[in-house]
Length: 199
Image: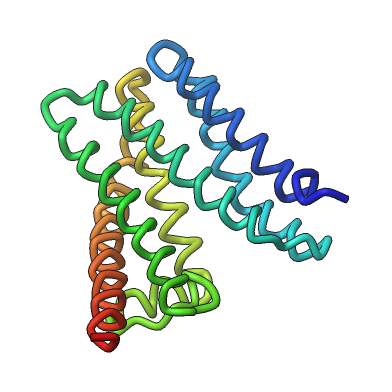
């Protein structure tokens, strides 16, 4: 069977389609948009499970997963930029930081011959906790995604539960972007250290 048709990769394609629907409906249909975005993000949980269950892990699938995560986050952050004009620059900064930190982390993992970006060694304790403490990554991603979706929905729907979820989860979104910054620093340090050793 071609790697293109591995079950986890089919899930990845469905995630991309959901994110594209969100891009189209994001400015005028909050319910459809929130559902399609959430389905895309939930797919991130199941593609890894499917890869392990069916023994269909692949480099292509790993890259597809990472790119889909970044693409879907970028779509929502771009919509939030439009919906919150007075603080929109913060969402653009978050978008840029998310893309750069993950790209640097992936590149440093390859450059330093490490097996996976989530198991890469770092001198920053917060990254060790984020990636290696059981369920920490899942909890942080869940709460930061909740923050972005509730920030989005809050513009269209005046529900107390949405506002409460937003106020509880937004600090975790800020923490996740702080971790992105630390990840960028860690990856940069490793690239420079390896390069310095060659001189």
